[in-house]
Length: 320
Image 1 (spheres, rainbow, N blue to C red):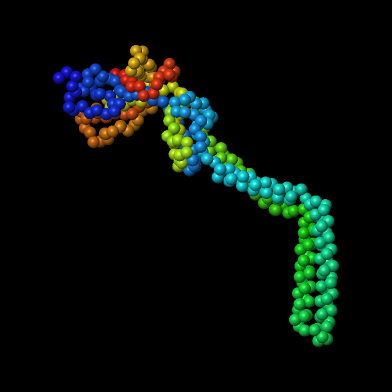
Image 2 (cartoon, rainbow, N blue to C red):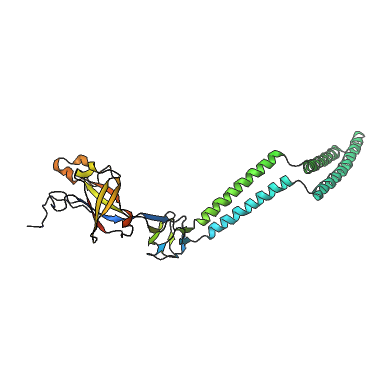
């Protein structure tokens, strides 16, 4: 019966009806118009708080499309900023030198420990003389010696602190403080960037095609929260039959027919697959090889910029 296809024809989505199955379209590869799509993903496992743009609306690069709850990240940023301020203050104290009042206080403390050491040293000498005369016990002698040693250690510590205030910090300590400040500053920058990423913005101009989630939904990290179809020139995604594969390479010009439009377009092949789709070639032989197809993408000229995605197309295959 006219119009019926032989039983050996295989139907594959968007596939060219191979010669012998339909005599009217044996040199056409079928497909559809496609546009590049951008998938914006969640940067954290958080709740969606706002979706300022509705589906189907035009968005510009940098426009906010989704925001995530960010209280926890704000807390992390505040903590990082506080640590940066501490590191900055410590480095400043090391490099600015000591204040006169700090030096005066340290000098007074040294004088206090000197007086205490003189007293403890005098007591120790007195107790030793009494011990030699067997007028005090061994425990009293040892206690006096210990008190004298403690007073000497306190005087030495106070003297060292005064020397530090008078001569400044060691260069090693200053370098360590500088390194700590660099680490703290980098942590603040990192936490600021993470917080900024909680506000998800369009990365290209286009149409907000879909919002898979709603306000109040908790989304997993890396889940797609918005899909944008770009405003770039579209392309035809087609399936090239095996007999025409050797004649099609990137950069080749092909004629594209769009359903509902009388005029045709001269497109340029941007890419064609090396491996055939659907059926491995090594499982076929003879005439079955003609049923192999290769996925390809053909760019429209600038005159097709406004063509809608999803419309069927037919692309003429070269005869040579």
